[in-house]
Image (cartoon, rainbow, N blue to C red; front, top):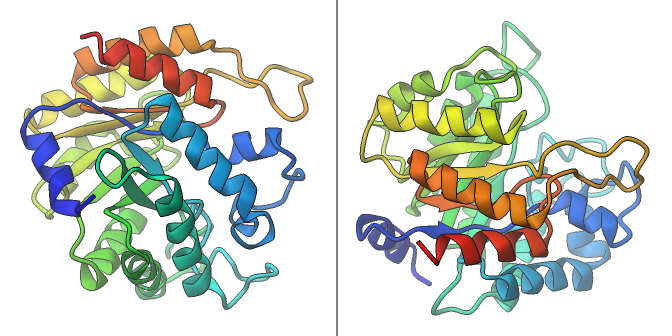
Length: 294
């Protein structure tokens, strides 16, 4: 699907269903503990492709590429250091193989670079911007329809990511933060600050993913909706918390509970709903069934 169609879908008021988790699902399918999921783009592409297909079959309108950690900065010291461009393009190809071109958008995932920007860490805003620019260009050339800058904690990194992406891509961009400290991020950022910082910077949607709980995700979405009514909101919460002692991790929220939560998130203001850690294709199917009955 063309990127502009994503914008039109949102303008028409459609509620879109995103996919579930990449990492936790691949772990359930044999990804060894501690192995970055991005490595399977090359090492086990069949598993990545099948997961995409399972999410599409479950009812996802949007599937994210397996590129969460595929910036050049995040790949430093890994077996695929220096291969960011190739990895991102290949991941986009895999997602497109699974996507129905008439009903499913392929979203390029751009996760955090794994380090903080000065003065809190060793990275400069420029090297972070350059890393995201490279990834955004590769994903765009790979044919994705949307770019999703996700699981952000700091305004500085997200701004550098957006600058880099906009430098090298014409695609619609979603910026999503992780509020893992209740209704604040690890760096103390509030939902209203996210909206006020990004609402006039050319983003297509803003939102939250991962996070602490379904209840706090609902609070975050309400705060975003109140800060700027009319801005499309993206919401991909975790399926609760990992169950102690389960390896690979099992999460404590059932598909039925995620479906109920998705309805509450839409009522709170979300227009795109899906799942992050622990959300399987069964969870996504419940989300899709719930929101399409609205």
